[in-house]
Length: 128
Image 1 (cartoon, rainbow, N blue to C red):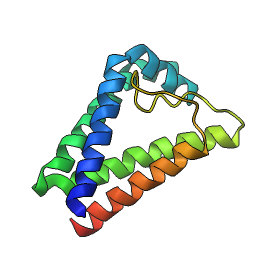
Image 2 (image 1 turned 120 degrees about the vertical axis):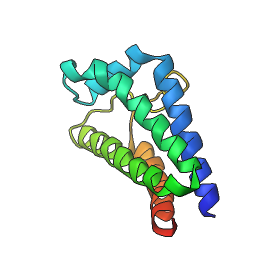
Image 3 (image 1 turned 90 degrees about the vertical axis):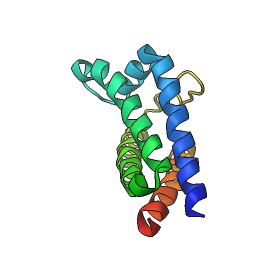
Image 4 (image 1 turned 180 degrees about the horizontal axis):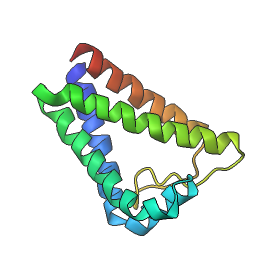
């Protein structure tokens, strides 16, 4: 079960990273739409996918899988907070969650999906 959770997290974060790297302008725009200052959006559009790739790689390597799960929890907490704040203020920006591969307005379903990934990351963190 833990191995499956690790692989799912690795695949999700790798696909998200590749999609964002393939569409850096879209990633930058999504960051701005979620409230990231313009001055941080350009570096963020590069740092975010590399953080996701790091999480993905760590989830696949047994000795550091717990670190990958921690990274996944941190990223998912940031993503979920940004989505929740946007929804609470009546905005539904394009999540750009999977970059060029799939992008849709953020909504309750996006938060529910993130909750599933948070549970998976929590299981990996808990069970190592």
